Length: 222
Ligand code: C5P
Image (tube, rainbow, N blue to C red):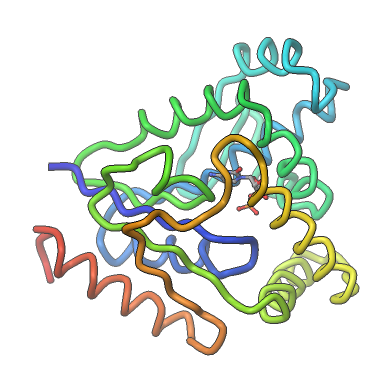
């Protein structure tokens, strides 16, 4: 049986760090679907493809080959792992991810990545759309101030200067767009476990997630 653990939530809620560690502890594959939307946005912008031009986006996606290995993402053989973390790419990703033509292709790719023994997949619609029958679903959230602070630290670590207030406004705009779009809006699945990580340490969050997954699945080693 393939174990599928979904981790959804807004930007800066701690999904990536928690998902990566949880996958390590459970020895499952970790897939960051936000990286896929970011990669499409990056390549579209570089090639001058309009982010609202569905025809051109569809043709672009048909030709792209994505590969994921050891936490790196390559597109047509080029490693874009650092380039997609640039702040403006998050904004472009939020725009391009609202296009059904993009979601169709990436959702198919995401479903194809669930292989035995299992996967921890993070994003916005993983528990609602990509894997509605997942073994365990989490929805991570945190206060807007805390999320902006965490994202600022992350950007800072990669040498990008940030004004935290401007970043908070940007995240709020992105969440609003992600939550109100017509296709696959950001929202917790009805059967998701909602964890507010505002006052929890990463260790606490991962420990709680691991406890729940082990209690609900037959993964070995618990
Ligand atoms: O998670 P991350 O901030 O890297 O995602 C970038 C953008 O990609 C999000 O703001 C969202 O618009 C989009 N996204 C999505 N569905 C997913 C993952 C990410 O729409 N499953």
